[in-house]
Length: 249
Image (tube, rainbow, N blue to C red; front, side, top):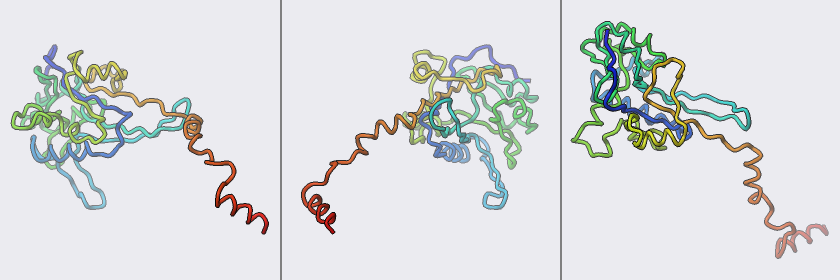
């Protein structure tokens, strides 16, 4: 079994803004593309154009309709990938030591050459963030794009996970959540960032920013009321003459 480090030098992770995410799946496509062409074994697809397609994805976006106590229902788009937990049960359950958590940045990875595809890590993960690649026979998960974030051959703006770089809405943020002065940590403090399923005790590094309350229907009508009022109560000019002429018919 793999032992977790007592502490890590940094806590590199994602902050996802549920108020901003529009569910476009650009992060899913970019993640699939980057990790198929670069890190580790390609992410395979089975029967991609058939009746029962399936495939391996490291990032997925779910959509839920939520009814708040007051106001109209909201459609919440919820991206989900590995949360790189501090107390990661997927690591400690691995029988070969293939799953491990890095001391230098806290990122959880899989050494694919040691993975036997037993699926115990997927069973242990409470978030369903691990997938068995049917073609490679090994477990796959988000790597925080370790082959991008430390790659000096890339422009500095590209040294972030592919999903962060491609998000058109700016809903995804990346940085050191162990540094209270980092931009992501300050964002979490300002917006009340939260853990996913904190009751599981895994201490996920990735955080979610909650959606902001939406205006009620009454408030929307009040805002639009001046624009909905008629320009003039009685027509004037040519329209006024035409209106009076038609009344006499």
